[in-house]
Length: 213
Image (cartoon, rainbow, N blue to C red; front, side, top):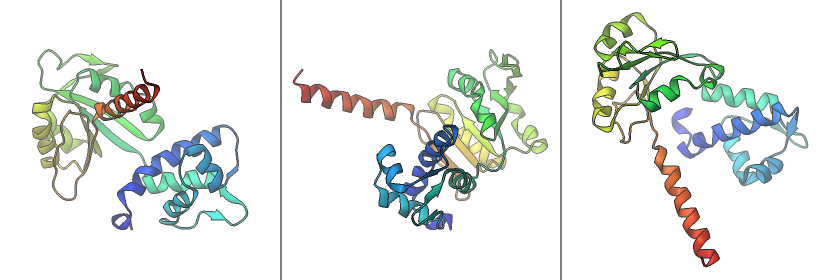
C-alpha cells in the first residue's frame, strides 16, 4: 500500500500525529475533521482524504477518536516499533542529536556515535564514547542497527552513505548540507536545516514590503 500513497500525504502524517498527541495530553477524547481543519490550517476534505488512504478511522456524526486515530497513525508511521540508531559525525549537530531525549521516548534508541577525527575518537558525548569510523564494519556485524544519522561535513556525506549502505544499513537520516543518493531499497531523508530559515526570510521580506517599511 505504501508505494501507492502520495509522498505529500506521508509528509502530513507526522503533523496529524503531533496534533493528536497534543489533544490527548489535554484530555480531549474526540475530534472532527472540521475542528482539525480550523486548528491545523488544513482543508477538512483534505484531512479526510489523507486518512481515507489508510482506511476509515472516523464515524459519521462522531468524528475521530483521538486515542485510536493517534494509535493508527503511529502504526502507519512505524512508531509502534523500536529502532536502534547510530550517528556518523560527532560535531555539534551529531552531539545535539545524541542528547535529544525525545528520541528514546518515541522509540528511537541512539546507541553509538562515530567519527574519523582523532581529536574526537575516544572522547565522551553524554556518557557515550565516540567510536572510530574504521571499526564500523565489524561493529555492524555484531549489532542490529536500523537507522544511521549522517552529521558529517558536506564533503564526507556521500562516502559515509555509501559506506553505511555497503554494510547493510537500510535507512539514513542525512543532516549534512548536501543530498546523498542511495540505491533502491534503502530509505533516505535529506534534511536541510537552512530551508525553513530561507522560507522564514521570505515571509519576513513580504511582511516588511507589505508594511511599507
